[in-house]
Amino acid sequence: MTIKPFTQFGGVEVPDAGFEKARIIVLPLCYEHSPSYGAGSGAGPFHILEASVQLERMEEETLIDWGLFKIHTLPPMTPCGSPEQAVADMKTAAEKIMAKGKFLLSLGGDHAITIGPAIAASRIYPNLGIVQVDAHMDLRDQWNGSRYNHACVMRRIDEEAGIPMVQVGIRAFCAEELDYVRRRNLRPVYAHTIDPADNSWIQEAVERLPENVYLSIDLDGLDPSVLPATGTPEPGGLSFRQLISLIKAVGRGRRVVAADINELAKIEGSQVSEYTAAKIATKIFIHCADREAVFPERGNP
Image (cartoon, rainbow, N blue to C red; front, top):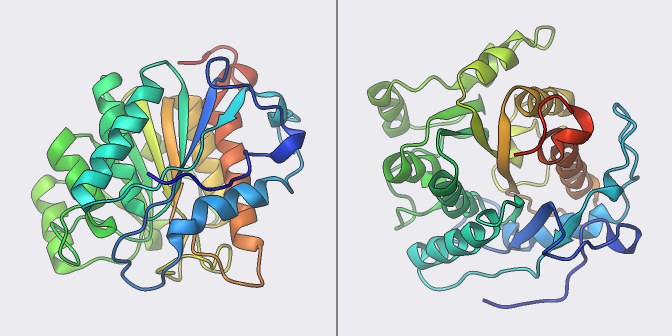
């Protein structure tokens, strides 16, 4: 593990609550191994944190100042060794945080950063499901010589933890993955079935989830016109408002115990993608991590 200079989420304008008093823990996971196409996600957490400094603190829909939430950003973690060891190290780090009742937001990194925290969450919170926002199924048994590659994320989570999944925005997969979907009777929400004028699919997705939820947002789940800086951009993805509507519905209808945002690969000379990713993080804070502020009738985990 290597610690590098970093910016706390929100910068100096957002008070650092310290680990013990914080409700929300931000864990930067600077991990990238054998990218399929564009590289750069290993530095994604730094770019998201730097962009977060530019965010306004007032959320436009709820008029809540997310900067008042008790947030603590941990030093970046750079897992090394084999992919298996890296995943194990991230699982250990995440489990220590969640075992203390904290809401964990992990910032990646490639999508392999989800495996450890999601499995750790399933060990702490019974009856856990996972929402995967993604262009890809990530259900290959192995890719680029590893069973813990970003293209194998959901396969590992399913096989090792048996966490029920709702996959949203899917529009790229191979024959092996489609076969796995059929054998496991999975029901992805394919991007082409999402009607821009009808959000009924969101409630249907929420109703398929158990009480506790882990939320994983691969940024290529968004349309490249919204967020172009990702390793494997796929046309035909979610709009920003569709993603936020999903986050709000999951936060209202279920108890989100942890989340991650991954696969940011910065485009030099542009800031739109990292800023958008940081904005998504604040939506997760408001609608999932600190529900008592938004949904007092439901309370916090």
